[in-house]
Image (cartoon, rainbow, N blue to C red; front, side):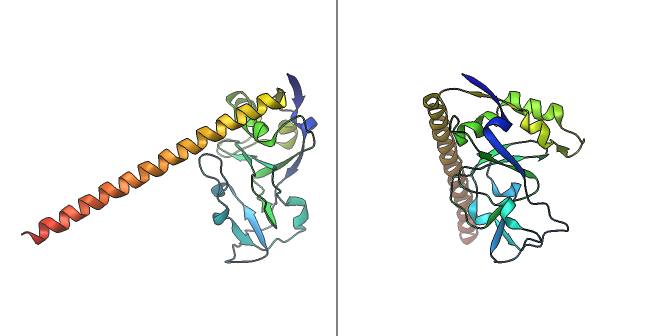
Length: 196
């Protein structure tokens, strides 16, 4: 088991900071990932990513497959792993973009580790602000990472992925069941009206 600081295994870049309010476009060349673009299981909802026109060089803030996005601002400081190939897509200023610079750690494992309670408590202990807490880049860079061998990391990642897929399917089933029940009630009401 290796112990490393986050700065030893990943480059840390602040997300795109707009000088003024970002105007969303119906379409365009660039897109901006925001907190709303992830579901409760940490999956990126690609279809919800907004188009916009950056005011400054977008290259610094581009997101690539296997990057991690760590929420620097908010009630929580969750990490999300980008598992798809994106073009001309930037991360919003509420994120740090983490790009691995070491092969001793898998992106999905690092994402999982950063979302664990001890790390989240560490972030909260260093965060400033009361309503909307903020974790500085220097605090994030000091985060302790425990790194088992790649095989163990892969087992953890595979188990978490299976659990997330199962939960997502259960959510879909519950949603369909609710729609079916509501539909049956509506039919019952209309059929009882016809019989009067």
